[in-house]
Length: 356
View 1 (cartoon, rainbow, N blue to C red):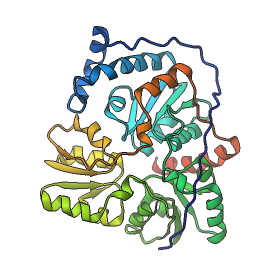
View 2: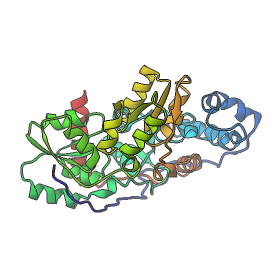
View 3: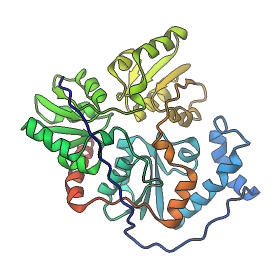
View 4: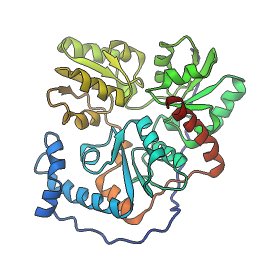
């Protein structure tokens, strides 16, 4: 398996494309009315958020839910969002593939992407005429920043004729240089759909290695990695199992292969959630960003979650106050250069059409 090196690329924009009427700053007092409005939400998260903290969250949840109706906005939340966002204000929740598909189907005027920058760019690619907001423009991704469009052009020159599959965790500029996108849930199918004996799968080296173990296609890789998942080790997994032989280990394919080798199941965040809901193990270790266990615990009360708490600092930049501020001022809209967007959209739509 070939190993290449990565650099860094950051693309941001602070241009708002449309003019929206101003709105007044809502009251953020915790009143009996707010308590009643948010009672059903708190019922879902009471095992995670102490009662003493709820008055700080509830006014924001109430205000955001009212304002998004006024703006005809929909909030997309990745599975790594904190519970007060995931259960409190999100309209659509899921992994990167689910959010990409839902973004393409949305009829809202405004999409608020509660995730990281590449996810917001993907929503913009699929909804070029809609306003896509990200509550914190600096919510980046170590994996997306590990490769640039120039790097991909270098790969084209080095490996002429070899198809290039890019993980959706990349910038629009990188997507524009590749043949097709993939996610962790469909990477094997996408690689095999290329009809080639040799494929470049970039930029996540661990996803590529784990895909290589499931296909006869020769996989060439890039030295990118998720800073959350690469910290897990196979030794750590064995220690968990030795201390509690009954625990089920569920891993994300961005983890190193020695972690995946120790897992009872490996899959995307959506796949991991489905596995837990279907199998309802007595105790499970979710080897991924730790907020996900918080978010699904309310739906699986019989499951005891072991939480190896590796947090994504980029995902955690998204907060309720920032979501509210984004909707009030309609700022930090994500834009993509039209020339780049046209080619990048092709790569994303080719992936989505493959799944249809």
